Length: 200
Ligand SMILES: [Zn+2]
Image 1 (cartoon, rainbow, N blue to C red):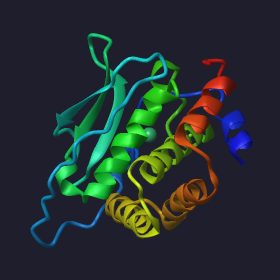
Image 2 (image 1 turned 180 degrees about the vertical axis):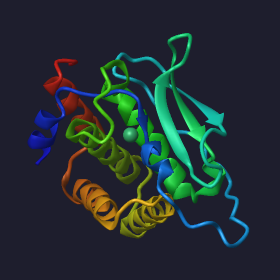
Image 3 (image 1 turned 30 degrees about the horizontal axis):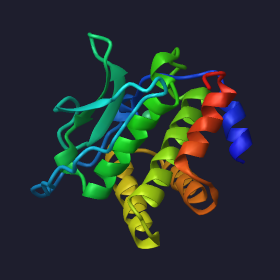
Image 4 (image 1 turned 60 degrees about the vertical axis):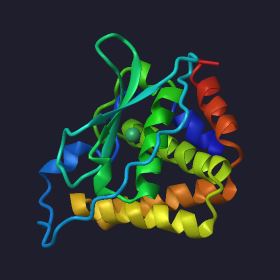
């Protein structure tokens, strides 16, 4: 499965907006109560595939009730992750988004051409970043199954809020569960992707 994922991932990526803001035109339920405000977690260590340090920057772009991240190079060419509205989501979700966006830097997605939104290539890159994110949480943050379940629940809540269909939500959670249960270290996974892309 890992090999297949790596092979399929070969020709893509770049910028990513977790939970694709392309979906932001989907009608979502209006909040009926005052939203909870969470403390914002410290970002993880993040180096891109060229060894450059990735900086995390707070942002308020997008819908205020939706936490999202974006991996990109800034106008000076520095690799960054913009963290939008993190206080709207629980800490497990914030940590997941940070590592998911970091993964786009680790795998070289950010410096590659961006596949069309929601193409199979784009979705594969998202699955790869999700996988790396959950492996880091498992191995570096000692996330046990209970913690994994909190991540999955938080992902479901946010995706439902945005208006994703059930199939998108369940397949995403199924992917990270498979990674969490069956895959080796996050660095080995990253290396496999890079090798497949000719970047290692
Ligand atoms: Zn992404």
